[in-house]
Image (cartoon, rainbow, N blue to C red; front, side, top):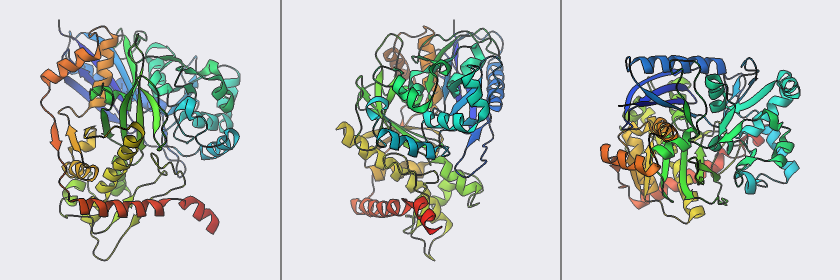
Length: 504
């Protein structure tokens, strides 16, 4: 009998549900966007109740599209990772909006912690991470210090904490768990032991009793008691970028994927031993199948990718729709000397410059809208190049093929620029929604439908159409010129916040 698994893909800008059949082909989907709440510069919040309502809607529409009699074996949850929610453990009522992964409000907390522990990288041996507002612990500490209701509830042991996967699981099953991938993004878990670390909890003042149980990516996490999938077990939780790595079949050491979404996220599988980065990357859990040792990854996170194109449309009103960026960029052969560094929330990997801000350099009277659009796409490609080079230095592995996914991979100009500027082959799969597919793979394994990732890889390899590839063709001199201009622009974007403060 045929069956389905359903992936809940809860992202930064929207939520979707996608149903996959027993050959891991997408058969039904539904998507709903949610509001982006920006109460202050650098702040970004989401309403957890709105997100949950959207999950309910997506599941209803997705399941309904399959008709009566469909058999569902499992639910997989994949999510925006570092985003934090605190809620009442009896009523489920959120005590504050979810503080989103790219929110900068906790920078002052970061500064204090760095002084306390002796520097940005002092705890990398445990966390695999540098101190940054990016990671959950700094957001949690800010919430404890600035939202009285949260401080009081934690002291009274009436509140619990989690990332979005934790919150959605609790709403579905009343289980309080977090995937090992997402736990590795909190700055509270020791990536060597894969347990909450008492020293880290003490530094941030986070009570262990309020934290979820850490689970693998294929654990059975209870049966849904609500939604259109009531009675279906939740058999996987996995962070979005880790899910994309699974969906891209990156199961061998050195295999690398990049997801082009709101941001860009590169992960390279580095095997079963965590390795420290000395070139500005993160060491993170890649994935863990129940009963097996985890695989680790180097990761480079770029904040602004698709969000830069949205900024051109919404804020600057340069575009009538986001797809127009490709049409305009294709009208010119180069950027006319224009370079954009979209450091709206600082620079992440491999630079880690929270005080950086966005700049546009090289403007002349010759500059037209197509040059700006091509410069925007070039900036996304160059940010990726910076991370690839750091990965090669840390791993000692030369990247020759980059597996890519996400909404922006439909942009052929961007994909060719990426191949050219990184001097490698870019491989675009037929199914670009690899994040949801990765969650579905883990859910199917967790439900016992498949025995291993290798079995899944054999099925997908046999059934999927071949990927579309882009090969490098840009002259070396042009690549070098882009590199020189990009490095100059990066330098100019740095220390911007400090310069502002000095001028004031």
